[in-house]
Length: 109
Image (tube, rainbow, N blue to C red):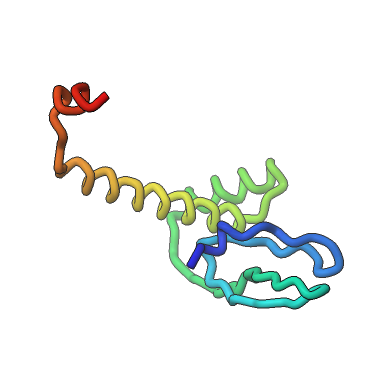
């Protein structure tokens, strides 16, 4: 099954369905004009964590200067961090091998 991030955004009478692979999603199905459309809608949950006072001040200042909501910035930062962590794990796994000798690769070209 593909992830919610692989789904296109649907516009029009349904409104805009914002899709974010980090948040918990609810799978929805819809029949329109004999066409089966599958989409995901965000289901938000509240998460509470304590952060450093100076970091919070920097976040608030940044959001105010750029017209952003702190919730959106924090959500995006978590999503990027998790994606980077997953990439690092994959890189470390692939570094273990198996390796093909370069001479063998050149001979197959």
